Length: 272
Image (cartoon, rainbow, N blue to C red):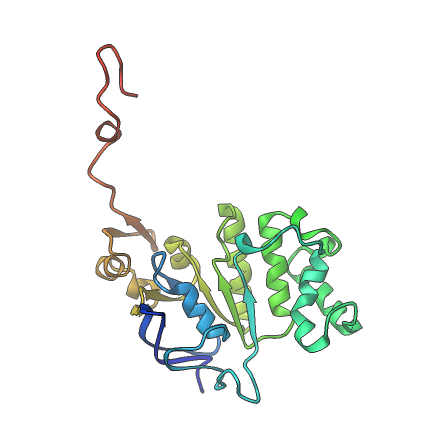
């Protein structure tokens, strides 16, 4: 079976600045993968390569065997970071979902009855069926994330791509979003997402790609969450803890205290 994502020796840069260097990897149908790495590691550029928004300087990218520009372009559902959305745009949750079919149906209100029914079904499936007529800015962060997830799913994509889907939401909402993605993956959907939350990735996502301009390592969390790999990926000092069949990652604390940071107190003052 051909891979859902196939990158062969992909290099990309802006001017003289190299962002991705000789990246090669294959992700197969049905995989649920997380892309992790520090800020500036090239994660967003990686996603833009996968979604066809950027073209490699060198190398090739294919989705489901098709390159962008082929007669049969790949079907990709994309969920952006909700922090990048302009919430002042006057649109309801239901209208946002229908934006996912405007490439084939034209701009609403000329979407089909079947499209509207599909949008309602997706909102119900994601637990926000009663919010279709609510303004998108009036929803909570978790509800907004589910609306954009429904928008990505309405086109029945071959691949779902998400940029930091748990950023800007509380821990409980993040867990709910990841559980929803896990259920979609169990139904056969291939998923690639970026995340800064290493521990959430270890608990919920079966395949992890460590990226810092190049692929440092990829595999199960148990395989790639080692101190050597994480230190090379993040250029930091990490420790990995195994407890009760769970995996935890923590950056080692600095060897200074609050007393080392605060200025010396004047006579008669105390340091908190």
